[in-house]
Image (cartoon, rainbow, N blue to C red):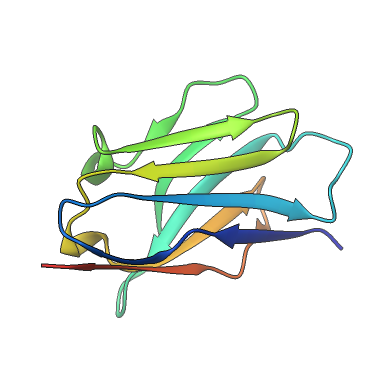
Length: 113
């Protein structure tokens, strides 16, 4: 069974940066059609942060445009999320998602004011 493994979360002050990474375990021979990042803050619904199809343009939530960048490597089947100018409202558990129903276990991102 394919799983996704995230890394790179942590604690950062407002204005700082973090980079999240996600890869499949085990490595799969096919390329995921869609890879992306979602997040869920306490008491809130899980929301899309950024995603990209195999050959398409990236898609971002309005709240992160200009601050976050998604990087996917089709050869390695990995997806990273570079997060700059982080704000306390970005505090959440961040999840990697592949295609329609493959999720990672989540990684905590905490941004202090």
